Length: 215
Image 1: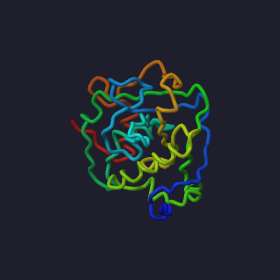
Image 2: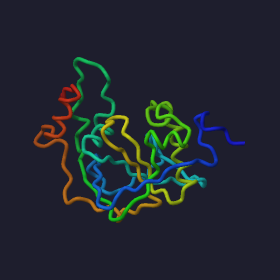
Image 3: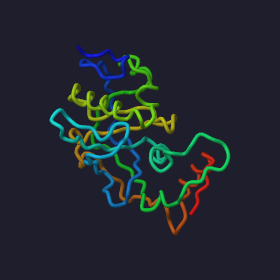
């Protein structure tokens, strides 16, 4: 018998809301320059909230993380570990080295599992149990992603209010249901470091976070 959702594990018959991410609605990514702007991550190793994930046969489900703002993409990547504390907070510029910001837009509407607060009530799990967890709980949160993928064949990914930037949405797309050429990349990516200095968008966010970028 499946355990109830209150046990923090996904049940066999989840109830979700599927929402549209509209065609041509921009997504922002921060990634290493060696990867294409619209590339999915097929790696079997890692420890993110919703990746790596696998189907029942043990085959990896490639994923692509993004946000609906550049701030969100930066907060979910290079600024992810900034602590909640006042005072001096250094961040090494080396973390930005060879990292780029890219924009992609879906060529068609995408159907995503809604993980906003109202939808989580329907699922029977709290935000603190799925979205606002620490890394220690990532193996369990990945099992939820696997359950969403298995139980809802139309779901092409997940959307939630970013833990790192609660003004924005974070998105993960399933490479089994969204093709690389379904995502139109903008012409150019932007290096986060130019001429040895962080670009203005990064500097502005660092100031708002109270972060000092150091060599």
